[in-house]
Structures are given as C-alpha cells and as structure tokens.
Image (cartoon, rainbow, N blue to C red; front, side, top):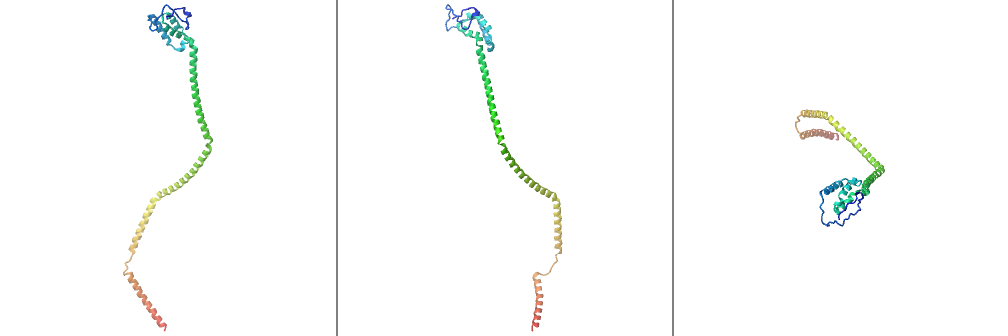
Length: 231
C-alpha cells in the first residue's frame, strides 16, 4: 500500500497511510525515481552516524524522509519511520548503555574484590607464619650456634695441623742438611771402625783349647798340692 502525503508537522511513527486507489503486489519491488533514490541514499548515510547523536536529534533525517515518504512503498516507509524518530528511544539507549557500563564497573569491582581477598589470604598466611616463628627461629638459632661451636673447634684443630705442617716445611731445608751431615759422620765412623780392625791369627776353637790347656796345668798343680798336704 502507498503512503499518502499529509502535513509534515503531523507525521508520527504510529500514523498509518492508506490509499485504496493505489496498491502494489506483495512480491514486486516498485521502481523508484532517481531523485527518490538519491534522497534515500542521503538518509542512509545520515543513519550511519553515531547512535548517540541520532537519539538526540533525527530532525534532518525526518525532514528528508517527509520529502519522499508518499513516493515509497509501504514496507520501506514503515521500516524507515521508526528510524526517523529515534529520539523516542533515547532513554532506552541511555539506560542500556548505562547498564552495560554498570556491569563492566561491577565486573571490575568484583575482580578487585577477588584480588583483595587473595591478598588478604596471603597476608594472613604470612602473619600465621610470623606468629609461630619465634619457636622455630629459636630452635634454628640453637642449632646454628651448636654447629658454629663444632666448626670453630674443627677450625682450631685445622689451624693447629696447618701450623705443624707449615713449620715442617719451614724446617725441611735444615733437617735435610742435618740429616746429610749425620749420614756423612756415620759413614766416616764406619770407615774408621773398618780400618781399626786387626788381623787375628787362629780360630776361636784353637784359642779355647789353648786356654783349656793352661787351665789344666793350673788344675794339675792344685791337685798335686792337695795330695801332699792331705797325707
């Protein structure tokens, strides 16, 4: 059905345009004049502006639509009319955008709350650790002090052994020199002893026999004396 032109200042989205004398079939597209197409393209371009601006003022779009509305098919006109009166949706749009902003803000706050909860849990764990810390720390101090005493004793022993070895190293040249002198003196003394050895004739057996022979002479004399004395 075709939309009939009325007074422009009286056109509203709820108006119905009827003209029983002119009808189109439901399936065919009515050809449009070039100037109408140009106006439609201008309306389309204006509708591509920001939605925030359109809900504030659609007057220019509405004016352009009123210029050609009686030349448009019903279905096209009925589709454009709500867009020409987008101001009526300003509150709806603003509320929707505000709800979206509120949801995002809430999500941000919830994320912050979660982070704060995690931080509080971590801080509480640190506090619990600090509260039980004295006993554990004192035990560690005692253990470390005992270990310190052991290490100091080991260090003292090590230093003593080190001093001995260092002194040995320092005394080594003199000890070598003294040992060489001692060895040299021993060798000389041995050589002197070897030189002092005399050549002794005979043998021990012969010498023992000679001593025995002398002793027999003595014994014979003693025996003879005893015999004469005892008469």
